[in-house]
Image (cartoon, rainbow, N blue to C red; front, side):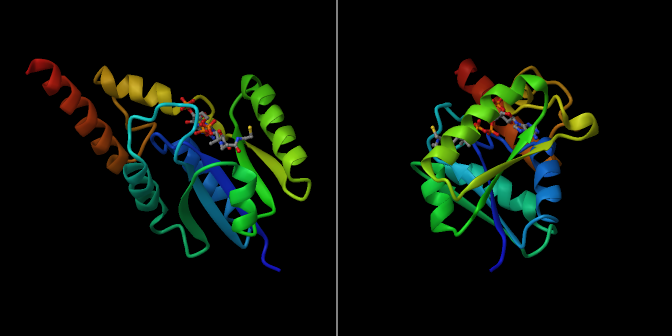
Length: 168
Ligand code: COA
């Protein structure tokens, strides 16, 4: 049986931190599903279509054993649908631990055959968050260390559009 992992998130937008986790996860699993939550409890600035496109663009060149999908409802139900037995999450700092621990425990009590592994963020990736990236973009800062040039241009389009809306 191929070992299938699932890496869920909102990916609003995908950052270099997420890519670090994906690159390391594909060495662990036969196949990795990057699962984009359609409706998380956040209010994403990018539509689900935009988030799928951005993630798919980043996955080009990372090999054949990745698929990018979106999901609604419970993550464990989607994991079962995809035959994934392991949920992957990134751990950036001790402050992430409590939330990740609760999420893992909730998912395991919902589906005891699905386990979670937490991969520590490496090197200079440990502080990135999608909210911080959006804040830097909104204020016109340099995004190069945080996101790819493709995501950077999407962020600039979005925030320049917002500025122009404000001027009309
Ligand atoms: N590097 C950089 N940033 C990282 C990171 C890493 N390795 N790991 C996480 N992050 C950041 C994200 O950018 C994000 O930043 P933000 O809060 O500023 O947006 C934050 O850390 C965590 O968000 P993300 O990884 O997108 O996950 P999430 O917490 O938004 O996603 C779901 C949570 C979608 C996995 C979860 O809500 C879910 O499973 N929902 C479905 C319903 C369900 O089954 N719930 C569980 C049972 S109650």
